[in-house]
Length: 138
Image 1 (cartoon, helix red, strand yellow):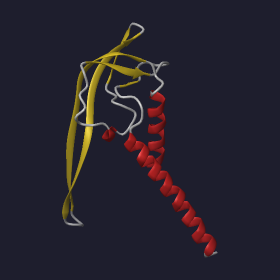
Image 2: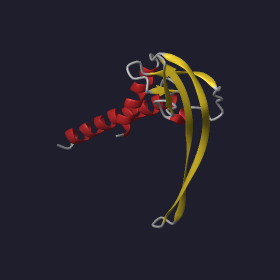
Image 3: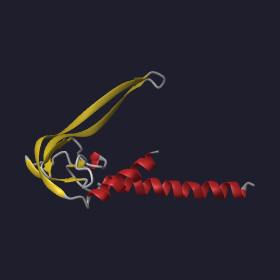
């Protein structure tokens, strides 16, 4: 499932590199770290998970029609720096057939490419190991 999601996000991220751009007014761009804690009674400790979220809202016009979006990218936003400053006026990329779909940052991020490569390698070598094991023990 993760492999399929990663491959789709990578393809969409690459596709955004070819989308046209237009000027946008950024209402806000706010990197935010959330912390989720939960008790695991069987193990006896509290687990803490943190995640970086990128919250955004921007408005733009394409062929005289106004749109607004909150999509930061078609990628894993973990690959986008929390220290990145986004100007109030910037260029965004939009899907030419349906300008309702847009991204603040175009392209895939390096983290997603690395995760996909590692997932693909583990599937390839895992499959090779399983086939070898069953052939040898048959």
